[in-house]
Amino acid sequence: MRILGVESSCDETGLAVFDTEAGLLAHGVHSQVAMHAEYGGVVPELASRDHIRRVIPLTRAVLKQAGLGLADLNAIAYTRGPGLAGALLVGAGFANALAAALGIPALGIHHLEGHLLSPLLADPRPEFPFIALLVSGGHTQLMRVDGVGRYQLLGETVDDAAGEAFDKTAQLLGLGYPGGPALSKLADGGHPYRFKLPRPMLNSGDLEFSFSGLKTAVLTLVKKEGLENKADIAAGFQAAVVDVLAGKCLAALKQTGLKRLVVAGGVGANRALRARLDVEMAQRHCLVFYPPLDLCTDNGAMIAFAGGMRLGQGLPAADGRFGIRPRWELAELERADPGRSGVSPPA
Ligand code: KG4
Ligand code: ZN
Image (cartoon, rainbow, N blue to C red; front, side):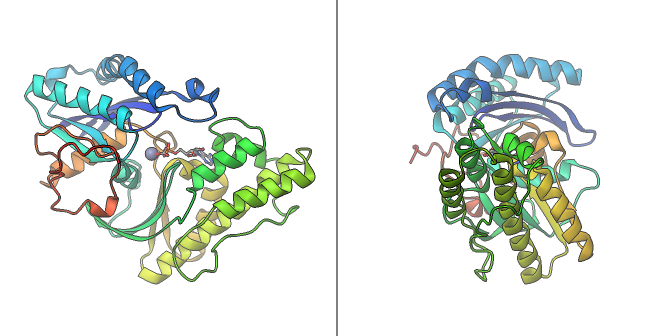
C-alpha cells in the first residue's frame, strides 16, 4: 500500500509517500517560518494562503522523488486536526478532492498521533507499550501508548507548552521567531547554573507540567540583568526545562513500570534534552527512542505513516466524508473511533 501524507495544520506544508512494505519513499516540507517571522508568530490567514500555493507543487515533487505517479497511490492521509481551521481546510480539501478523483480512500489523521508514532519511522523502532513525551509548540503531554489508537493521557501542561516557552523566552532574549532552535544554540555557549531559575512542578507528585512561571522568571531576570549575559540566561532556561521534562518522564516510567520512552514533537529535536534522557535511561536500563531529526517538527511523513498503520491494522480513520477538527483531544481518538463527526466548526 502506498499512502500520500498531507500535513497543513500550522505553518509547515508537508507531503510524503509512505509504502507499507518499503517504508518512507519520499518526503518534503515547506516551512513558512520566514514569512511569519516579521509578525513574531503565525498569522493564520497567511498560513492558509501559503498552503494553497505549496501543496500541489510539493505533491509533484515528492511523487517525482519517489519515482511514482498519482495512479500508484492507494490512499491519501491528511491531518484532520487539531490545528488552525483555515490551514487544515487546505490539506483536507486537497486530500479529499484528489482521493475522490483517483477513487481511493482519504484518511483523516490526528496530528498528535502522527507525532506519537513518528519514532516508529526510525531504526530501531520501539515496541508497544511505551511512554510518550509529546513536546511541541502547542502541546506538552505524557501518554501511555499500548498500540495504534490506544493512548492514555497521564499528564499535560496546565499553561504554556514547552515549545511555546522556548519561543516566548527566545523572544525575550531578542532571538526572533520561532526561537526554540536559536535559543538552544545560544544556550550551548552559556553557563546553565549561573542564574537560578525555578523548576515548576518538578516535585508536584503528579505528571502535570507548568512553564509560564519559568518564562516570567526569565522576564524578571532580563529586566534585572539586561541582555549582556543572555547565553547564560538561555542555558539556565534550557536546563530548567530539561530538568522538568526528564524528571516527569522518569516519574511516568516509574508509575507505569514501563521501560521504553518515546520522545516526539519539535522540542524533541533539542540536543540538551536528548543528551540528558540518553544518560538517565541508560542508567535505569530503559530504552529511549526519537524520530529521525528531520521528522521531529511537522511533516507529511508522520501523517502518511499513521495512515499506513491504521490501514494495516484495519482501524477506521475515514468515513468518506470531508472533515476537519481544529480542536481534538488525542484521548478522544478511541480505537474504534471512525472519526465520524464530519465537519466540526472551529471552536
Ligand atoms: O512539532 P512542531 O513542529 O509544531 C507543533 O506542532 O507545535 O514543534 C515546533 C516547536 C516550536 O515551539 C519550536 O521552537 C520547537 O518546537 N523547537 C525546539 C527545537 N526545535 C524546534 N525547541 C527547543 N530546541 C530545539 N532544538
Ligand atoms: Zn506538530
